[in-house]
Length: 205
Image (cartoon, rainbow, N blue to C red; front, side, top):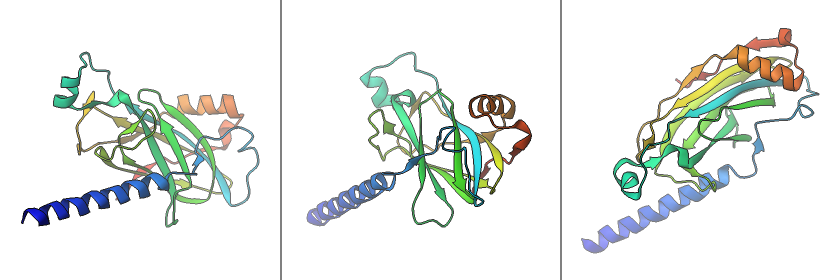
């Protein structure tokens, strides 16, 4: 019995390692979702422009020590968070965006028309971008790219506690902050406000 238990544990460890490597490779070589003014200056008939933001919000704990970490979990502010963007029914992701806590990340991107997922497969991307698979989340926000249109898709807001323990569920919501975001994008990218259409992200059902 003892031998079988060790063998099963070994197999499970190998399986988890394979999954970890596969997911790490999944995000390699992806293009940044955030694009420059020159990158979006010309679009093909099949492409559209989308812009919005992602905010991971958390307080810095007043007390911090190794014991606090053991008892209450890792600090949310110890991590960066990598989001993967993939077109529906595509074989692999196409873009990614990395967000630091309490620093709203505004993105502007030129993409092929269609429906896209913003996915955060794991919370626990440390400052050196190594994935810690203990911090699992299931965030799926969808948005639509319409050819020859400029779409504001809203803010993906992830309010988090000061610390997070393994396997804790993460909630998120979609907010509309069009005035502030559109003003920034218009100023930086020279987009005509009258050409902007609002079509907010939505949840996967």
